[in-house]
Length: 364
Image (spheres, one colour):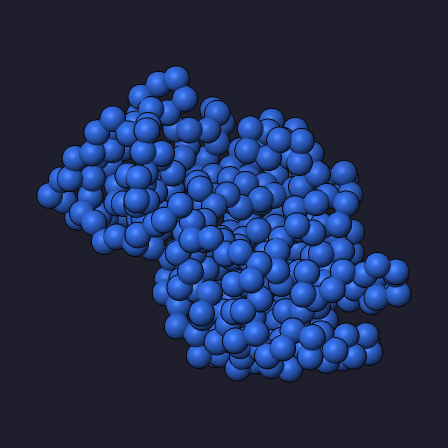
């Protein structure tokens, strides 16, 4: 689909949505040559509307003004079942039906992540911006509530993940980790929650929450564009790079860039297996990430590649990330263009792979 980036006024778009008609106001982010649009509403949500579903479009003389934290909290609570409350911080709107102490613990963790993420890339010379919209996080009290609410979007995968970021709604959804089977703990004070979630059994759970929240920040600060065809080895590998906070520290992320040993061990174990996928195949397409049988190995490989490039080719990595930051939604990114862009910044993939395997196979 050919797409043009547009800077348009606020429009009211009336369109068919399933069996009903919906009328929304917002800004047109992109428009295809057939008249289909991607509309962004003031809550930050993206609506992809096919040309054939549009009944009318009307430009109005009004500025596009994102919702305030309070306005967005009110809207999200109206969408959720009874019993949810909101907790607001400088960057987040946390809506929850678990304890307020857990919502506060989560928001504190995410604010520290946000600060660490922005500082990390700023120190590397990457120019980012503060999120235009408040970042929404929904916390369900139980895994069953979360799975039921997420079934339409995740399908059968809802039972296998403890949290996820939605590119269309811009929300992160999760459930209270203190009620997870691995923890088997009683919900309590902030101090008790912190003690519980610093236990070794909790670290993979917390890492998953941080992973999804990293996606949310990256897609809201100008580092990555929502619904752009970005290589998953970069998108997912970068999130894995940030996913393990140091919860013994009040700052939480004093160790960004430390070795992620579970991922490293899996990566190195895979090196000894026959039929190992090549670096070129991971660069060219996302098939390994989308196949449940190969996804775990792909995530380990993606972490390893990001770690290698950041450590040994930092300037080229930053230039590559900045190049991809300009990628617009729905612009096709076929294998040949992915390989060409990688080669533009890092050189011949075969040469990169030789150095990559040599260095990462010896990493301890």
